Amino acid sequence: MSGAKPQVTVARSLASGKGSRVDATRRHNLSTILTAVHHRPGMSRAELTRQSGLNRSTVGALVAELTDLGLVREVAPAEHSSRGRPSPHVYPRADVTVLAINPDTDAVTIGLVGLGGTVHERMRHEWSAPPTVEQTIEVVADAYRALAASMSDDTVLLGAGVAVPGLVRSDDSFVVRAPHLDWTNEPLGEKLSRALGVPVVVRNDARVATVAETVFGAGRGVSDLVYLNGSRSGIGGGAVIDGLTLRGRDGFGGEFGHTAVAGGREQCHCGRRGCLETEVSLERLLEPLGLANVDLVDLDDEIARNAADPKVRAEIQRQLGVLANAVGNAISIFNPDTVVLGGFLGSLYAAAPAVLDAAVQKDSFAPISDGIRIERAQLGSRVHLVGAAELGFLPLLRDPASYAKVTAASSMRSVTDATSA
Image (cartoon, rainbow, N blue to C red; front, side):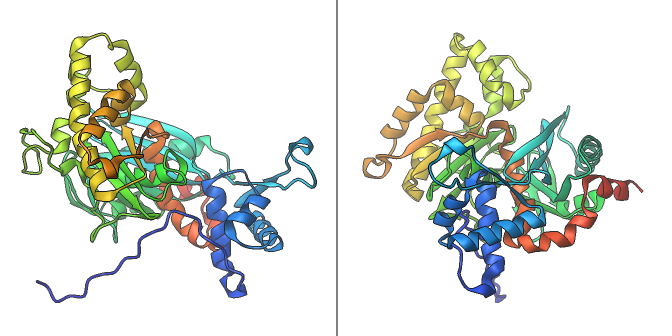
């Protein structure tokens, strides 16, 4: 056992928190207000006052400062919307953006995401075979230049966030192993940052999706949540426990795809047999549908078109039965309020929700599972882009006053001009 002192990392709370009335904590208060507006665009000043615990005049001053910084804007409500003096509504500036990237075995999806979770653009480049890191970077750089050409000169880019289906070391955005992509020990964050000329943060795809669904989707307002996501690369997930994201020692927590399920016999690439993602997989679902590939945006329609096919129905019911075993285990371990299913797992659930609900009840310890909600993820195909963008927004949300230091050199056009030179 090594005698080195372990690194201590404080878990990130997903709530905007409470403000402080101490003048020295102005930065904290700016962070509190901007985070609240980013998570819930259109909050009124009155709502911000109630949520933050600050007084009305302090909130007004903070909103005015964020407006001067170019991070939020206020909209006066219609006069008939409330009695008395109406409270202005505060929106984040959606032209403050992050480049979001989600590479996978079948395609790389690239988007431009603004404050408030607004997805301005979404581009999908399909692969005929799993790409190398260099191929991915080349496609991302080309897409970045195309996106920049279509955006206004006022659009500001803070950096890039990447959601990778694999083990990513949190402290340096280093991809330790992405088995389906066949990436091993890749300094992806460093390579992409050099290619794009902006800061880059890389994390596991399911982990960032957990954050996105908690902040903007089905888990909004939920303190204890389990998220399971299914993609072409397998099944991952994450958990929020008392408002804090599960991380693990190296950032690898939440690898639900490599938990064993009852009756599983298939060999998994990890070396074990009967892992969840070998028994519940998009590839095995596409086979009876007669498809080699599909954009998850279209999967619901494909299932609906083939709903009468007995082979399709049988495979959906089989996968839901196995998934119920994994969901029941997660419920026993985490005792969540809500279980959220994203990616192709959401499509499976939508095809036969009663089947999964009944199987989970049968396969769970009743005192723990009673009252737990199973929900489909709300962000759909946007979830990885919105989650990846949160990685780039986090420094700004922690210190909004620093924004003035980066705007002069970070318009979309100026950055891409510099990288093309």
